Image (tube, rainbow, N blue to C red; front, side):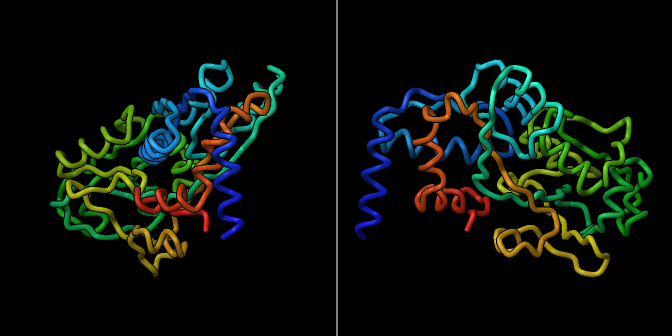
Length: 269
């Protein structure tokens, strides 16, 4: 109890020096960051602005100094780190939560499961009809995030094994747009963070070994039996990290990690 009281007092003391913040970047992290900022703001009377746009957009904003925190659903790239070094800036990286990347289709689609190899075939354009994977005779319409998205990069690296997406893939500017499009298109397929899965779409069971097909849920994400799990990051400039520390500490606290779970992500512990 004494440790808890001490932690609260220390956080309160740091919050007293907290300045208005801007968080920018990943659409995947967006719902979590918005809720954390909302609770933090109400609790401590502090202002935090949260804007999406993609991981690459957030990292670019951190580089030019227009945001204090870049949220990212992927690890920062080597060339991005080089740009920070050339600008004389040092980075602070914090993992704030984990996420399951769900593969979603229209609810009318009879297909319930796909292997990693089948997903690769679909998103690289080798598999073009649902009947090729046990479904109806219906053209497959794949949706993807834009290349500035960390989710785009993560899916390409871990599911497509760095093979290129098909040329005719429909790139969307935001995760919500993918969900909406798939809910309205019978032959559609795409990928979104677990928190974006809703009644208008259906999440598929996925297998990387071709035998065990796992549904993306909070439980399978937490115990890491679902094969497409990824960390979610906050990146900050070391020179100004003290300004963001109260908010980051709140997210990493027991209360902040409880919010992680409530919003539909996976807490660190």
